[in-house]
Image 1 (cartoon, rainbow, N blue to C red):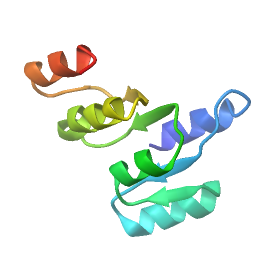
Image 2: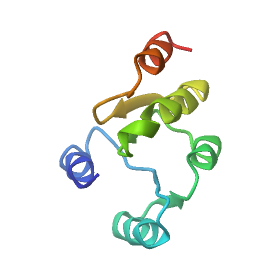
Image 3: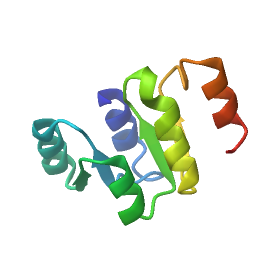
Image 4: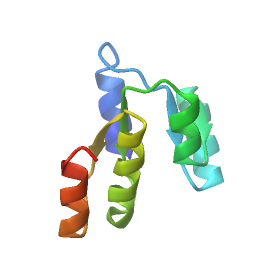
Length: 98
């Protein structure tokens, strides 16, 4: 995620970091303070409470597809680190716009 934060900072005239989601409370609090943004412990809560255009998934590969589905269900675009899915069927499902 550090590289993504660096890219957002570098291109801050074109992209705004509104919120972060992290399951480790210490890291969540650190980034909330560092970037002065709202923090969430649950992705679904963040999607329901924020008006987001894009979510960058920086989570373990095995959960990318479920998180991408959740974002799509909430009409939010996704950038994901590779791979987008670890199973062919999950990739196909996500590629069809649900």
